[in-house]
Length: 202
Image 1: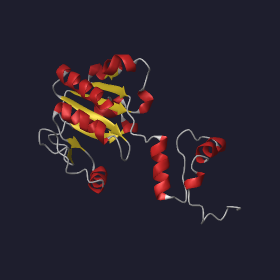
Image 2: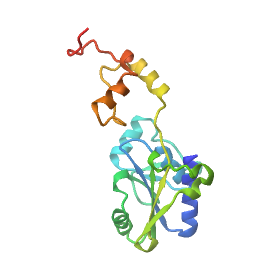
Image 3: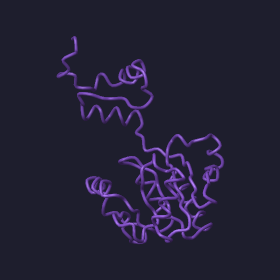
Image 4: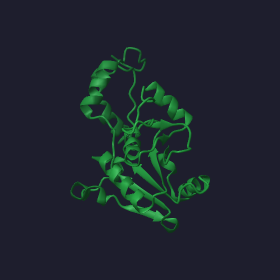
């Protein structure tokens, strides 16, 4: 559903301003499906930096094509109206700099922040129209928070841990205190390989 909303928003933004640059926020890996949804909607390859390109090759996703036959990914900005950039760098000042760096190729830039933190209950009924835009710079820079998550379910994480039998797991979400970390780790104690743990007492 999130990818459908991204595509709808991209198409509506192109109808508003045909010469729009789209920036999809991402972590070091992930959010590729979000970028693909935008790319398909506007029929453009997605510009990625060399580091992400190397990761896409490792993941065997480098040769993917859009439905039009164009390559999905490019390491050359020329001809791309969709870019993947760091999720943390999607402020209006940064977007304005992207617009300037394009030397007149685009008249507007729209950023998508695809993250689960964007979810609001009203979205279940309203769909993409509930994704609010934050506009600045006389409307030339626009930012949407779009609910999107690629996180695994508990069952998927448990199955992965059982298959890999890691020596160590480090919780990173909802784990601010030691008690929070222990609560999460209690679910995985029987699948972690602790044979080399010198602090173990048993």
